[in-house]
Every structure is written in C-alpha cells, then in structure tokens.
Length: 306
Ligand SMILES: C[S@@+](CC[C@H](N)C(=O)[O-])C[C@H]1O[C@@H](n2cnc3c(N)ncnc32)[C@H](O)[C@@H]1O
Image (cartoon, helix red, strand yellow):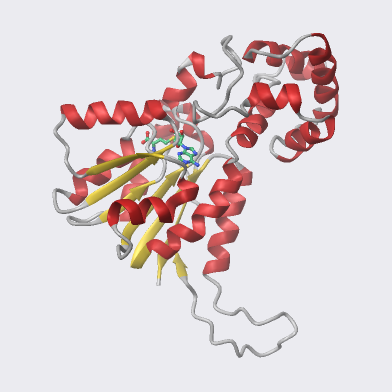
C-alpha cells in the first residue's frame, strides 16, 4: 500500500521519518526521495538480510539520507534517540507489519510450508527460540494457547495432540514435517480446500516466535510520543488480531473524554492526543491485489498527532 501510505504520511523536503519495517525498502526509498538531502529516514528491521540488501541498494545509488538499524521496533524510542538525538520530533512513522515477500520466497527461512526448510519462522536469524524450539519444547497447554489465540485454529486440540505424539518419536525439524502433522490432524474436507490446512498453525507460531503482537503494543505509544504535533503514524496490518490492536489504540488516543463511566456529565477536559485520519481502514486497490495477491488482507490506519 505504498501509494496510500505515502499520500497519508505526506512526506515533505527536510522531514524526519521512521520506517519501522524496512523489508524490501519500498517505503523507505519513497520516503527518502520525498524528504531529500535535508531530511532523514531511519529504517529498522530485525532481519539482517533486509538490512544487508538495503545497504547495497543505498551504496549503489549513493543515497545519503537513510540510516539503517537492525533492531526490533519495540525499542523505537531508544533507536530514534540514538540516531536522531533525544530532542527530535518526527514527521511520520510507518509500520508495515508481518513478513516481506523476500522472506516468504527465501525457502531457507522456513516461512513457507510448501518448501522443506528448517522450521524457523524467525525474523531475526539469531533467535534461538524459533518455531522448532516451540513445537519441541512447549507444554501441550502452551502450544494449545498459541494455536487458539494467535491462529484461531478450530482443530488446535487435535493438531497439538499429534505434535506431542510425533515429538515423542523424533524432534520436528522441518517445515514440511510440521505441515504434514497438521494436515493429518484435520478432516479430509479441510485438506481439500484451497487454503493449506497448516496456514493458521504457521501464522500462530510465527506470531509467537517473533512476539509480533507484543512488539506492536509496545511500539504504538512510543511512536505517538515521538511525533511532532501534526506528525502522522501509519500502520499496515495483515490480520484481524493486529488490526484490532491498532484500531483500539487509535480510538483510545482519539478519545475526547476519559471520565469514569459513572460520571454523567464530562468534567475531565481531556484533550485527545490524536485525530483519526482513516475513519475506516484503507484497503489495497484491486490492481495491487492482482499484482500482489499477498496484499489482499492489508489494512491501513493513520492518525495525526494533535
Ligand atoms: C511487510 S514487510 C515490510 C515491507 C516494506 N514496507 C517494503 O516496502 O518492502 C515487514 C518487515 O518488517 C520486519 N519486522 C517485523 N516485525 C518487526 C519488528 N518487531 N521489528 C523490526 N522489524 C520487524 C520483517 O522482518 C519484515 O522485513
């Protein structure tokens, strides 16, 4: 949703922006071009490959206004203060959540259950508690919780039972080993559907390995605090759990009254912290979905700091 993000962040020459999810650097490069030599874009990613690829791109194009940092955007304030100074007030922040096409396509990262690879699912290759660790070490109860809460998987109980049985015989090491266990745990009618039966299990484990929802919850208030008045925060999410966090946080920050419910007439004189720019989440154009089917579930929400 590059066009929509850019239109809503309105980057101007001299602006200071943070792209908390560098990925393939599409958003970062667009922002960098708009802010010009007098502006700066701080681009963060947990993934070393994303940082390395962007470093090459920046060097070969002699771009001077992008700062790359391999870190978790949950440490946003610290990263921004370290690189832009403690006094900086940002013009905009963007978070384009989830995983990048580069990560899905790189079979060795284990994000796709269609190709055999080590069962990692970690954005940060240094992560030791990856998906293989979780499926082989967590208790039945904890695995069930992950599949139920993060995957909303209706067959969680049977899948987890079969994981526990399988790991008693041999450690589950690869993507396809796990995908096969999941496939064997669901009814035949589900196996015949277009969507692979392991989709929800892999999503749930990915969210757990990378603590994605927790990082988002921690980063949102920091982003708002770092913005200057009039600065904007744009978040692109890809599933309902993420979108709910963003939507509720934005609603909360935009509240005009924070009186307790028993107070009949507002007396709090509370000033809303942000104004919601996207009353309804923006979704990608048909053309974008046709070009990139993975974008089909994207939702963009934007707020402006008062
Ligand atoms: C959807 S992609 C971003 C795509 C990017 N907007 C582009 O133009 O190519 C998300 C990226 O965010 C990174 N990421 C996800 N969670 C992160 C976190 N908590 N901290 C830092 N990077 C994160 C992933 O490694 C991935 O590269």
